[in-house]
Image 1 (tube, each protein chain N blue to C red):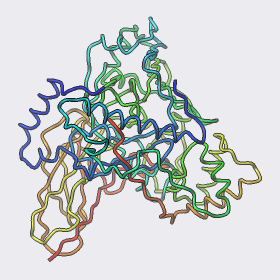
Image 2: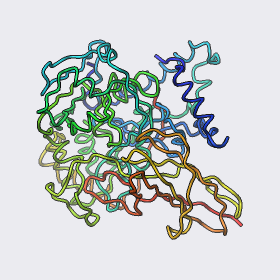
Image 3: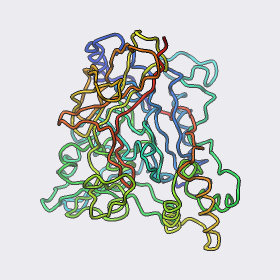
Image 4: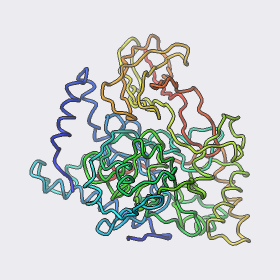
Length: 139
Length: 381
């Protein structure tokens, strides 16, 4: 089993995505039916300037509570999961309780600070999120 | 790892080309380089949807197929992998990929849609991944029938549900993704698949093997499959009793739905999307509108497009290619009659008579969004 956990897990995810892409290029280069490539990526069928899926991450906006959010949320998922939400205070309260029940690292005395940060930044009018455009994911 | 086109695949493609009613349909079968990209909605766990303008082919290429992970997966070691088959069977087994491949080969070309596809379009908003349109794709899945595996193990009549387990493990105290589906459905047409579009199943899509449940939402399609267990009762736990449930009857948007008024989410809903429409077009000039349509019913009967808010509908031409529970590509030549901003709407009707509604059924987890799809076109004088 390859086991990936914890805050730096995205590195591994990105590495696998990169490996998949490289693997597919290598397989293509070996095939006599494919055109030879002078250098890697020259004949890519996608825009090579795009990042590999999972390697470029969005960050929490600055403000009071960001440090708590970084510590509590990023252990299990990237900030994007939060950046895209548009929730009322009631919904954020329920979501935060669920995440704490599931193991989010936030101490009792910092919970209100985190809730206020989430409500202030990711309420129903939140329009800050745009998905990140990435390369195709590898065959 | 990649293989040349098999004779069967070649014949399928050649047959499709011969059937295509126009060069335009055939030309749509490659995704242009500038559309070959993904939309990452979560960096880790990795979640990414396909842009609609890349979903223009009957078979969605593996590298443009949406990716969904609950958490960072633990991929099985393919060399040591063996599927556990147990529960209400007379001979519990562990089957390697080689063992499975000795059983009759089964194949299905069908739609895989994430239960939450379109969650980001619901109002009021719902927590969770804010998928818009592209957590869906159509692929050819190859493997073995679940029925053949269970019969080999001596399935008992006491079994009513198939419990499914994958190798992914949740972080901290997150509940495990353990699922089950009604055995009748599993025996009817579910497949344990190790190939996707003619190549070994990619790691991101569940290698070495995943479940394929034609017509049902992605939550039943267990990836990185490690165990199937025939049981008298459904699986319990968060991902059965709280998540992946749908209101028995539609309620007001935003209103809570008590758990006893919900049922397990199974079939996907009838739906169409517009994948290609010009951003602007000159009045009385012909443009071609294209898209796809699918349902939890085996076929699509009709796709219609409206240019007047749904008062009148124009019937699109369905692409002849079809397999049970696969999507149908469709196209419609359209010449706008007057200048201005036009909102084009699409709706599909399936082979069982269900029609895509203007408004989806709002539900507390944001599943199965299927409201009419709208696209704006600027019509110039």
